[in-house]
Length: 97
Image (cartoon, rainbow, N blue to C red; front, top):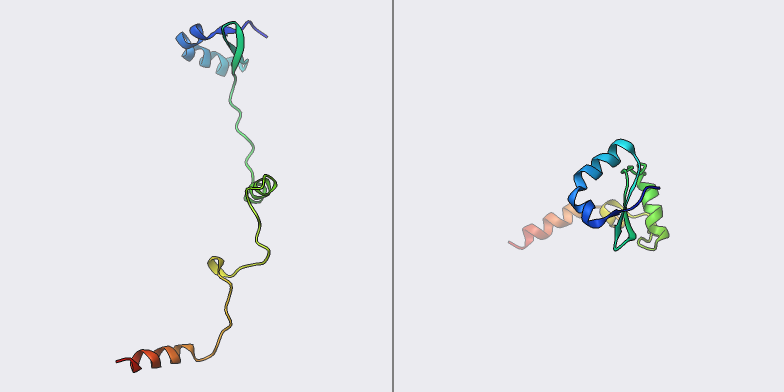
C-alpha cells in the first residue's frame, strides 16, 4: 500500500487523484492529521437483483411483512357477488327522482 496522502493535498489535486484511480484501479488512502481516514477506490456496480431478492432482503431486515393471504385487485378482497346488482342500482336511482 502506498503512503497516505494528506487531506490538504488531496483537496488540491482531487480531480487528478480520481483520474489516477480510474486508470490504475489502485485505491488511494487520504489521511487527516497523519491518520488514515478515507479511501478513494474504483467504483464497482452491484450485481442487479430481482424484485423477489429485494423483497426477501427487506423482509430479513424487518422492513417488510408479507401478506398472509392473496388479495384481489389493488389490495381489495373480492366481495360476494349478488345477482341483479345493476337492476337494483338503476331502480334506486330512478326512484329518487
